Image (cartoon, rainbow, N blue to C red; front, side, top):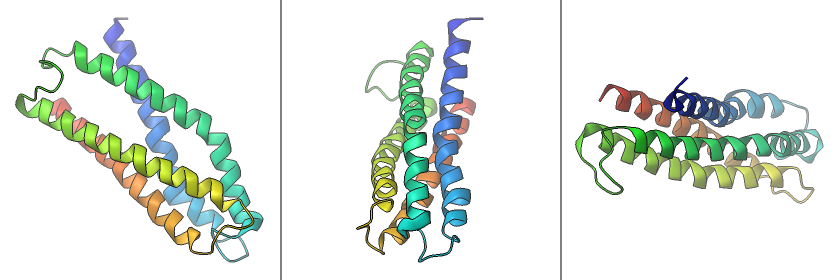
Length: 158
């Protein structure tokens, strides 16, 4: 199998893990955990503790997939004949990739904030307002992930 196929496979697998985790968190885990008896997501026992435990377990996979995603993305981009050089945007494909890269940067920022919220949710001194922030940040991260997939699909057709 050619190197480009391995790079694409790695890129897609890393995307599934990265985006999948945040979508699962936003639409399944947080809503399910927030229904646990107590005062919601920020409740230390058991909801906040459970979310913090999930985050600690998922973080190595998220970080590894992020590394694979970035490395394979660079490899795929530079191997594509439409790539004309760093910072040179020519054509729809390059424009869409630029937008995708900006969305990925936004995902890094929002993901860092979300991960911090999840870890803080397990602490005894977590503020009650943390629950609402966590829910909205998780939804934003899932939306950004879906946007990355949409832009990727559009770039493939460009």
